[in-house]
Each structure stands twice: as C-alpha cells, then as structure tokens.
Amino acid sequence: MAACLRFYVRSGLSFIQASNQAAIGLGCGVWAARHLRARVQRFIATGELPKHKYGGSSHSLLDNEDFTNEINMFLQRKGRYVVSEDIVKFLADPAVRRHLDIRKKITTKTVQRWLQKMAYHWRKQPTGQYFDGHERADVVEYRNNTYAPRMKALKPFLPLWDDTTGEDQLPDLPRGQRPVVIWFNDSSTFFANNRKTVVWFKIGNKHLPLMKKGPGASATAYDFVSAEYGFLKSRDGESQARKILFAGRGCDGYMTNDDICRYFKAAAKLAMQEYPERTHIFVYDNARIRTKRPAAAPSARLMPKGESETFGATVVGADGRLRKVCMMNLPLPSGSEQELYLPNGNLKGMATLLKEQGYDVSHLKAQCANFKCADPLANCCCRRILFRLIDMAAGQKSNLELLAKELGTEVIFLPKFHCELNPIEQCWGRAKYIYRKSPSSSLTADVEANMVKALDSISLKLIRQYFKRSRRFVDAYAAGLDGPNAAASEWARRKMLRHRTSPEHIEV
Image (cartoon, rainbow, N blue to C red; front, side):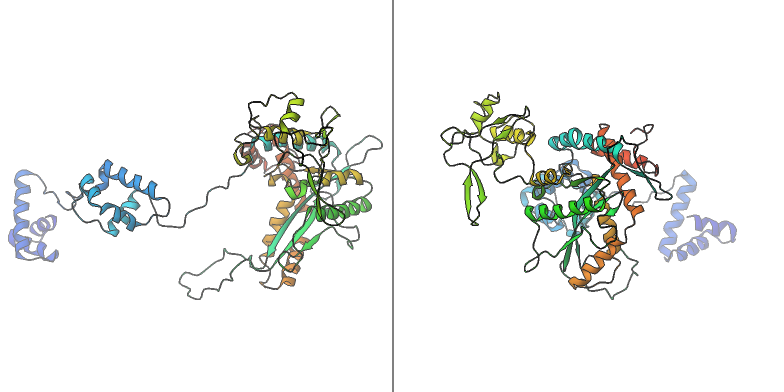
C-alpha cells in the first residue's frame, strides 16, 4: 500500500498504473493490483489499516495448563532417560487423547518444539556438586573440638618465613622448647592416559586424534610435605621419604596398615635424624586403612547385645592361622578400665556394658537397620552408643598413634572429607597439571619418570602458599564457621597474600 501511494504521488502515474507497479514489486500480477487499490481506497475512506491474519489464529496445546501439567507428570514418572518418542506414544493413547481433547496426530518434531518451549534441552546432563559428609554432625564435632583446637595450640610453635627472601623466622619459645614441624601425608596416583583435554581445536577439522581406552599404566606416590622443608628428604638429597608403588595384578599391590606403619616408622626416623632441632608431628588422612586399631582393641561393630560364650577378636597367630582372643578392656575417660568379660570368660554384651556406664537400654534394639543410623550422635541403638563411647575412649589409639608414641612423636588425623586442610592435596594438583604437559607414553617407566619430575618441580615457595591457605581454613573453623562459610571466608581473604592467619578485621 505504501509503495502504491509513493508511485502515485511521486512518479506522476495514474492510480491503476501505480498499483500495477507496486504489485510487480511484490512479484504479483493484476489480481494483486486490484486488491491493493481496494485496500488503499478503504484506508483513505475509513483510516483503518487491514490486519494481517498470518499467525493470528495459531495457538499451542501447551497454552492449556492441564495439557502442560499432564506432560510434566509423565516426564516425572518416566525419569531422566526420556526421549521425544516416549511422549508421542503417550499422547497417541486413545484415553489420553480423549482426556486432553487432542484431535490431530502429534509428531516427533512437534514434541521436540514443546520440550524446548518447556525449557528442556537435548544435551549431556551437567554434573552437580558432589555431596559428602563434610558437615556431618560427627565430622563437625571432631573438626571443631579436636583437630582445630590442636592445630591452634601448635600455632605459637610453628616457624614463619619471609615471603620475599624465604628466610625462616623462628618463634620466640621458652628455653628447652623446640619449634614444631608439621608433616602432612597422603598419596596420589598418576595415570598414563591422563592428558590435557582442553586445547585450541579448529572447527571443521576432521582429523580427530585417537583416544586410548582406560586410564593406562599407573604409578602411586606416597610422600610427606612441610612448610619448612618441602617434601621430606635428607639435607643432601640422597635419602627421601617418597615411596612409589605400582598397583595392580602382578605388581606391588596396595598398602596395608602394616605397610603404612613401616613406612611411617622410616619417615619419622628420617625426619628426626635430619632435623633433630625440631619437634616433628605427622598429620594423616582419616581413612580406615590409617586409623586401624590393634586387632584385640575393643570393637562394637559385631558385638552382640546379650552375653556370649564365643565372641572375641580375630587375630593372626604366629603360625599364620586365624584365632580368637579376648578383647582388651575399654579405657574410660576417668583413667580406669571397664572389663568386657565376665569371670567365667563370657562376653558381657552391649546391654550390660552400657548399663554399667549408666545407660538405660531396655527399650533399645541392638542396632538400626544395616547400622545406618539417621543421627550418628543420637542414642538410637546399643551399637551406636557403644561405638561412640569406644571412639571417645581416652586409651583407644590407632596403630599409627601407638607407633608414634613409641618413636617419641605424634600423629594427628585430619577430619574426614576435609581435603582443604591438607596442603599436600594442592601439591598433587600442581604436579598433575605439570604431568599432563609431559610427552604421552604408555610405559610404566615413563609414567614414573614424568611423575617424579612433576613432583620435584614444585618449589618451596609454592608449597608455603598452599600451607597458608590450609591454615586460613583452620582459623575459619576455629572461629566457628562451617564449610560453606569457611570457603567464602577463604575467598574473601585470598588477596591477603602475606597473611598466614586470617585478619581479624575481615568477617564473613
């Protein structure tokens, strides 16, 4: 219409000629020119523009709230592995068609458009945040009441250092007391096929690299690290605490508690021999393989509720055969011991043991289903109460702790699920970042060589940065913050690079 009027006004054409020219511009003929003249005349007479009918009467079944709810309910019943064909089959059911008043056949393309309109997208499902027991009640209790206070008590004995020169600054201690060195232990496995996956890749390149199946050959490194000396080794570098294992069938296998104790004994002797002017404390991950207690130590795991003639601890005899022995008495916080067995040699049972400690367990069952109690700190069953009492017993030490006492040192266990408190975890991450840049090889010898090279490339300055970060987390937990708030506190304080503790003027 606008083109027709422009031709009529500006070109000096007649009204019919102007309409014909406008119709030609639209790719149409005389019929379109006739309708164009009629619409222009109607607009001049009434001032109303004609309405475009395209899309005016179209509507989607999704506009019906009941229909959308039925689709959503079907998706919930079907689960995450639904495909568009499932919805097509669902809507093809005669009963569903009558209920939803569906008159036309629903195609797969239509369903796909519906799903996109409902905010569904066909893509790889993103991974959410992993959930563990970081804020579990018993873990928080150990972190706040045992680990954090112990580390804060050691703080005045820890040497500091100058970030610029790297020179140690010894604490001012009373005569006869030595500075403390804390050695953190852990292990990490390096795989042959652990390569970089994020690279600059040209779109349209059809020559894709062949990917190897499986992780490939592996090597596991066990080591100790401290803020003062880095990885544990002799001053001349000839001896070191690092232990390398090749796990798998026909190889070295995996470390047992006995292996860990032997390894710790050698590492502790190396540290005390090379640095006798320091007091050495060793920190271990709170894993079962490391917290294992003596075979005859009291255990509530399989103890019956009532009296038993046959119950005892299973140990390996000198001849290599399994045999049962009586468990050791249960140490009490008062310093005394509670006998687990009657004079006739029978086990008292959980009910009698708890009754002697003042608990009324007449209404409690032996244990909750599969010993999966809803609240680890609740008095829900006999086994949970006794399990907690044995854990809190003053004399219940692990094999590592007993060995450390024998060697004249100390072992501290990290809270479970708290890798942010172990600076060696960041050392592993840095080493693997460097390891992925090394030339790819499937040979075990190359995996070992590249792993050692990556670990040795971590500087003492970088290790001290990792320690500062872990110590700031300890400060946050000691101040009463939980996991998420401690992480937020660490983020807020990261710019305080020269602070080894949390500045008091920063609160989260």
